[in-house]
Image (cartoon, rainbow, N blue to C red):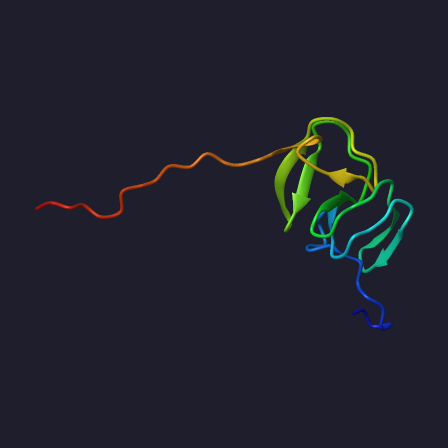
Length: 104
């Protein structure tokens, strides 16, 4: 619930994020008026899914939790679903490091 007693529709996790998270099923045309967000959805967004808070060009950073989590593979309009169809996840390379030597 927000301070007006209405169910919160969506969440912007970090002030620097350019995506929001649907907390309930949202419909095309819904107007999101929550802290850090004011937009009209351009398509249905299921609960727990992400949507763009701004128009994003191809190869734009997707920022969530204040960090880059992916890149757009095509333009994404403000209020549109963020999915594997329009975003490639950004993961850093990593290696498992041996922490302990087992000399027996």
